[in-house]
Length: 302
Image 1 (cartoon, one colour):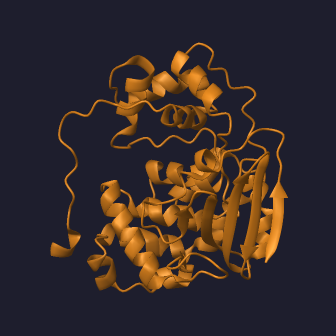
Image 2: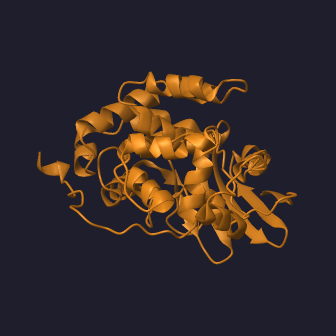
């Protein structure tokens, strides 16, 4: 076991900062309990189980497995160290101002693991969250390996790039992932080492997005969903999301807008637009639901 204590100068909330990493209630890589978070992932040194516990003044961390030292060294970045909110001005909008005050522990995470953020984002393309979560849970359970250390029962570590490439076509089919998305996962797994190099210091956000989108099957939405988590990009916006534009419009001006309208509303915070999105989500604002919902599709029948 390797351990550390993280005591930042600013408040940090595990739930607010890392809540975007889990992919549904049955994600075998992410387990929350009353004290904090258990999370498994794959590092350059091998698999790891990371235990994060919220304590007064910060977070305590323990890690097990071949990747333990790598994971422990990355705890500050994982918990938003270097994510500077000091220049964010939301004084002109009451909802944002109140959310920032109430959610002082919110930071943008940087996992430093590109493929592990990219694969579930691909699986989530053009389907409901329920469908995507179900597919992700099944694939990780079937092809992931047992979590090292004293992880809660049933926890798994995501497959390696090679294991993703070897998932049989009929298993993708049975998991509800259509050929277009499964091909994109397999293609991304084949260039995984290049994708991880987008974490090289000095690369601009535009260059990161360009390299991610150079992979066939990766578009603007998927690249943004990935960069938000793997790179901690404070400006990445998931344009093309089925609900996001409606939600942002409803929260900021009280009515739904399309993607162009959302980008116009967020323009005053260019460079920090993902922070605005996270503040809106954390605010507790709920959009009135109306109109048809996306239909859950069963790709195994096709």
